[in-house]
Length: 201
Image (tube, rainbow, N blue to C red; front, top):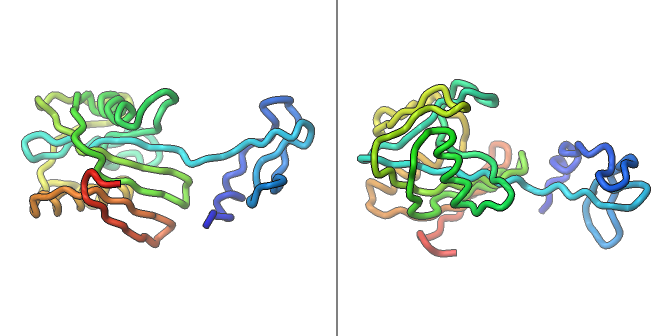
């Protein structure tokens, strides 16, 4: 079910990128939801979910976290990650963001968590990743970077729900000795989880 509230809230196209005329929101012929449509040339400006890719880097049973230097949630802790660039695979994007934000080189081992963050129109995913050496440094978007054991995680200072859930799943799975892939919907303050075995689709 499409989110009408998000569609209405997310309108930010004012002028057509093709002809420069004003854009209005309407349901195009053959469609079933409002789109940004040019009143002159008829071009439809689609707004689609943005993809955020990141890693859960691990070294010696500790996880690498970054303290954000930018808004939103400046000063809070997060896993390294960010928006996918054109021409990148999700693995490449996750590895790039980890190096840019944490100065760490990693090898991804498996896709671990995937979150449909419906209320902001994002798809956020995190890979389990291994660090061969404990070399890391804060990038321009990070105030500091640090390895944490489970007991030292700053749980009350995590930036996003997706980060908290990914870390909770990781430490729970590590105790069980089996890492399972999870898909979870997050919509405002409600969530529905579907758990998949690692490597399944």
